[in-house]
Length: 136
Image (cartoon, rainbow, N blue to C red; front, side):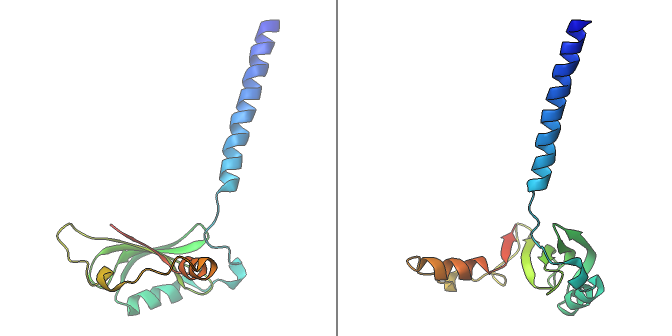
């Protein structure tokens, strides 16, 4: 009986440790948007904005505290974009292209200039304020 209690006690401790690690991992997950819900604009306003830009909107949901829009852009590419729920400002966009498609209309890398990396703070701030783009 004593051995059974020791085994049960060890299992309880192990279960508690594993559970606390999992819970702390979830608590450490950071939301991209931290706008107070009371200040959020309605999803319908974002839907109208996207339709005016030529998107066909499949779904708008809340993900990581942001509005996430899934659909097709004006050129018919599968796209996913995250927006601030209060300002409806673009935070991140992901566009999926077929292998044979011409993507030059989205990014003209030939004309982009790299920032002068010697200006540490000014360039880091200007780069961090830009939306994240993923082209697949």
